[in-house]
Image (cartoon, rainbow, N blue to C red; front, side, top):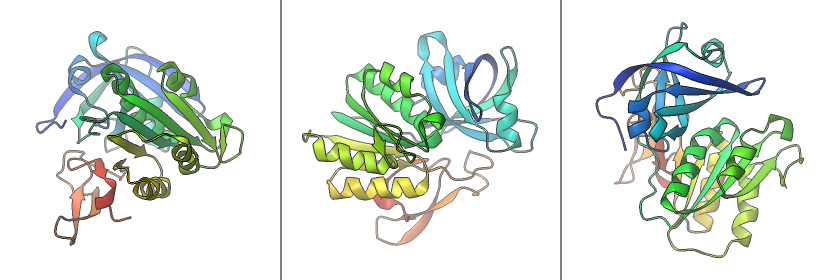
Length: 264
């Protein structure tokens, strides 16, 4: 699903929930976005620091007209957004981009690292709504930096959590946990791996999916400016159908791509 004519919305913050010192979940009253957003899409939020900030959609409550966004503080702009309080208003552009494709799938394995667990939570939410068998692999640096573990478990999907520090289910990163999972899973037709997180992790996940002959979709996290395909800041290198190398815009042609077209 994509938005060819992005709409700017003035939305109100319903609530703000701190997950840890660097991460906050904002709930926005945004009925038009909630009605049309698809997993893997994002919104571009205004702030007082020049450019808008692209944030992947974490979840929607369609009947209530609410959208949830996970904000990880990495600079002044995201710090300002994370400090928003109920009643504050935001200018939001979206929903933007092409999301994950779930049609025809019988099983979905999501693999998220760090803040990549946010947009994949939306995938899991929709899988539950559609009755798709879903498993979630999430990787963190340590149990202290882990987020959304209870929320993922609350969706009813099978979960496997990894930590570099060795204090969760699997010692290592998310790709290590995926390898362990794939070794144990019985094959199911129309299974796909969907991943979002640090680029090296996604590359490792894509390689594992290829080894197991599973289709893999990756959500790239390129730097963006406009978010609507005009500025070309987010151009990413891909393989074209004829085998040549070209470029596509992450914001409108992605952010989700088939793993085999990405030039890592």
